[in-house]
Image (tube, rainbow, N blue to C red; front, side):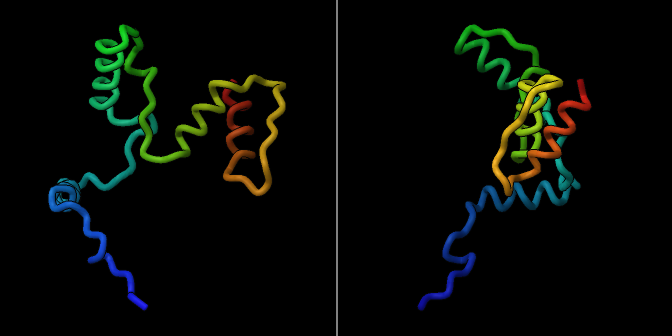
Length: 104
């Protein structure tokens, strides 16, 4: 039986170097919940130039994980008095539901 090690699936050298650079530049914290502003501006430009749609930079959400996206979806879709049905066990849906109703 072969033992799997990281050497079997190495990351590209360029990515490894960028990880090292980010570490050296103290870029190791989570990003803002709505994403890097320059990336959101690039998405805004892309959507505008390719699709002819005009959105404000703050209308783009580019997340480094699922939680900001899930929360943004709840905030967008839910109103006070709505019923939310989700499976159990689930991943923090009870908290997102509670927070969504507290926000409005």
